[in-house]
Amino acid sequence: MPDTFDFSGRIALVTGASRGIGRAAALALSKAGAHVIISARSTAALEELDDEIRAGGGSATILQLDLRKGDSIDAIGPTIYPRWGKLDVLVANAGILGPLSPLPHVTADAWDLVMKVNVEANWRLIRTLEPLLRLSNAGRAVFVTSGASSGRHAYWGPYAVSKAAVEALAQTWACELVNSPVRVNLINPGPTATSMRAKAFPGEHPETLPSPEDIAPLFLEVAAASQTANGEIFDARTWLAKHDSSVGAET
Image (cartoon, rainbow, N blue to C red; front, side, top):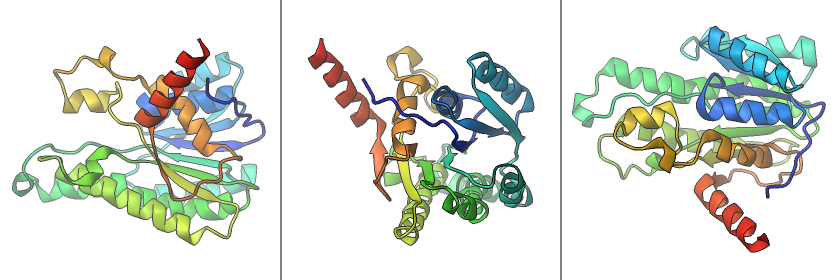
């Protein structure tokens, strides 16, 4: 079984928390004791998540956020600081798939939207939240990437390019923070039963895939104060295989 991590007294911000991997990560963090700032565009979905977190004995704060609006992202740091004075964990999970089509057929508007949400928004999160993460005794930032970042999949152009950019963004930031208490890493969830995956592969049976809840403990591991890796990409499928084999060995 994965190690149990204690996030008591720690403040975590999760983007894209209304569903899928972000939702599962937020729930896992709250169950581990963190106060979770849950962020997404849908207030209704965040209210449902807030109810579930509180029903489980956790605590959360709703932050309605449209990642297309740069000014709103820039205001997050100044909003968090007066109330908590720090940020311990950032899970930058939110992203969009964009069009799956040949590159010459991608419209400029569609390209710009994917880059704004998947890349620029994360850069803006870095700018507004780095001072708060530095105020933590062990600030941890976790970004979400994809195997598509390799660029070896036809028709995935905008999404693939955006995820390659996220990797470069996070790893560059990790290098800049090497002499600080902040650590920056990425998780590649691999094929997971999410609505984004269903949109990309409508004929796939979701029950054949790991669920967001299956990989949520990996987010705790990477976001834990004890985590010393920096600038690394953690592969969820590899982690799951190791976990499954260790469970099998115990039984």
